[in-house]
Every structure is written in C-alpha cells, then in structure tokens.
Image 1 (cartoon, rainbow, N blue to C red):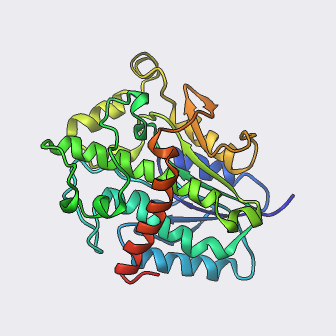
Image 2 (image 1 turned 90 degrees about the horizontal axis):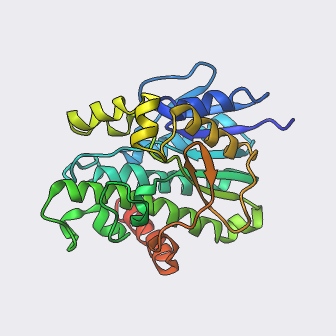
Image 3 (image 1 turned 180 degrees about the vertical axis):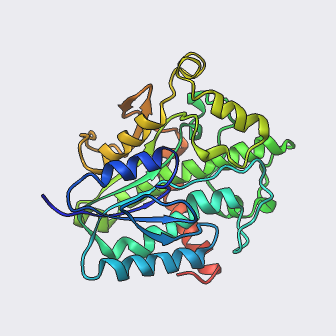
Length: 304
C-alpha cells in the first residue's frame, strides 16, 4: 500500500478530528496537522494561525522541511470560522471570516502546489449556505468580490443589519471555496498532474466549533441540535459529526467515486450527493476574477 503524506487544517476538533483519526488508521500515513491548541495523538503537529499570512507561510515552510524530498498526496483545508459581525480584522487587516475561510487557505494552496504529488487530492470545506436554493436559514452571498470581502468598508452592497452582513460574509467565503476549487481543477497544473479537486459540503453539522464566536443563543442551540431526535426532526438534512468526518475521510482516500466533471460534493442526511452548486458558484467570470483578486490581495500584503 502506498504511504501517504496528508496535510490538514481543522483536523483537531469537530468532524475534522474524526477525519484525521480515520485517515491515520491507513498504514504508513504521515499526518501533518496545522493547529493552534489541541492535538491528535499520532499526528505531526505544526503551529498554524490562519489569521496571520506570515504564520501560514511559516507553516508551509515547516511542512516542506518535514516531508523532505517526498510529495504531498492529500491536502485538506477544513478549518473555518464564523464571526457574528464583520468588524473583526486579522493582523494583515483583512475581515477575519473571509481571511481564515478563504484567503489563508488560498495562500496555503499556492505555497504547497509545487509539492503536490501526481494524482493528489485537494479538498476544501465549503457550505450549503453559499446557495440561496438551500434555504439554509442564513442570508446567502450577493457577490464573490475578494476586495470587498477583505475590506467590507469598500462593499457597496452591505445591509443595514450587521447580522445579515455577517451571514453573507460567511456564505461568501464558502462560495469562494467552490470557485477556487473550480479554478484549480481547470488549471494547467491540475490537468497535467491529474489532481482531484473537491469542494466538500458537510451540511448542517451541529456540535462543531463553527459557532464558537457566535451569540450565546446560537452556541446553545448548536449544541442542543446534537441530540439525534431533535437534529433529524428540526434539521432533516443535517448530519452527525461522525458521519461528516468519515465522509470527508472517504473522499480523501478516494473511496468515493465522484462523477466526472463534478467538484462539489454535499453530505445530506448522511448521504454523499453531487448536486450543482449555486449559479454564482458556476459563474466562470467570477471564478477567474476571484483567483486574480486573491492573488492581488496577497501581493498588496507582500505575500507572493
């Protein structure tokens, strides 16, 4: 069996911890987890703060040093956050939800692309909130303009309600994930090296740390919905932490046959599905523009 070098963010809590533990049962796996605090036994841990692009750069350098002359077989960008407002800024001056969910992972991807193996799998975690047709009880995104998302004070589409803006910011960051994966899949590098690029939507998964920065009511409700009876009754399309984590592991190991031409994989009621993403996520002009704008943000911040 081929030994695997796996790099993962968001692999020490929530369904990500289920994923990393499952992946480490594969014989010969070298699991490298980027994290700030908690640890998973048996994995190599390298400090990673996604609210700092310089820290992302240092993390990538440590990964390259650790794998030496070997290649990366699986890259999973799963970490995320959901701020209750759009006022928080990273050390680089970017809105935090966008910076962590999209820009930091975009930068990490760019740094590690030269070290990805032939037939590598790149998986980024997205969300059904990107799609207004999902009726996710959350405001959907109205655009994927990276400049506006990074600097909300420039955004001419802001709502008068801060809660709406926060919901849009999160949903837009997850829209950016799908657009990034689509552009990556269309890239010369991906085609030449037969990379499999997947945007994984775990569906509503109560009990994860996603709302740890949310209001007290939001945090309590998120935990209450972990009770199976309530979760299935109130959120029929939702999933358990275990199902979400094991499904991500199955995708990472290539145990799931993704239909040709598909990059968006959504877990609904414990079953992996392959629906079309939102209309905005299918917009090729947005796809190209987001990549270019993200590169411009990195260049302006002197991270190239």
